[in-house]
Image 1 (cartoon, rainbow, N blue to C red):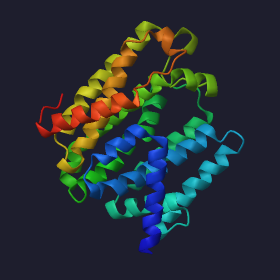
Image 2 (cartoon, rainbow, N blue to C red; image 1 turned 135 degrees about the vertical axis):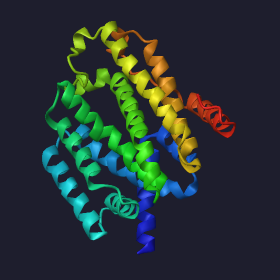
Image 3 (spheres, one colour; image 1 turned 30 degrees about the vertical axis):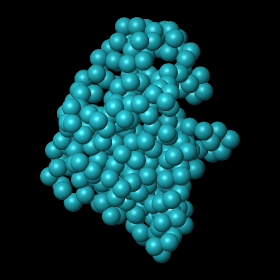
Image 4 (cartoon, one colour; image 1 turned 180 degrees about the vertical axis):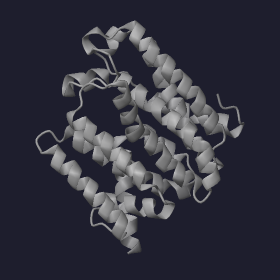
Length: 278
């Protein structure tokens, strides 16, 4: 059984490394004991997202419904023959991750199957389930048995997750619309996306970033470097997006180069070491 768990967790690590260089770099900055549980969370959410975003030739509703049922069955039974779900049930059961977080996540994934326009309430609901609860799942791992720390840090984790997701929405606004006909921002028409609308979104993100940084400063030492690295990476991406006109965002996906990511990692580690987070 131990060998099966090890190989399942290795699958989650492989998925993480294949799909996200930036997230993989952040995990490597965590204490080693945190690597496997965070890989397990990322592998799970990545594959669920893959179902709703890319499996166009299949019945996505059937697949995500089955994946959801299999997820909760794996958690209840403590075993799955799907290595991604085996890893995820292990982290859920070992760190007592709330089932309502998982339900909210699937609710947002299912919204991607039929929603192309969002009201303000739907937008907030989607962000909670697709981003904020991921931060809360990771925070359960970071805080382990310390429930008091979790309760204090949870609002900051949600704000940071929300900021990350909104930056993703801005970065991917062109592909979301062209490939799926989708715009997440309420009352925004892609063809008429304006500087005024873009700046209002950026102001919202800037406030959430400021709140999130305060939470990072109070994280346990084992995870602070990795979370701060993600913050710095997204800050860099955010700065590039702010400097890009709305008209250009409608045609170009902004990114941070791998070389820049490595430089940011080195800079971040120094700042954490000397407690000069900014």
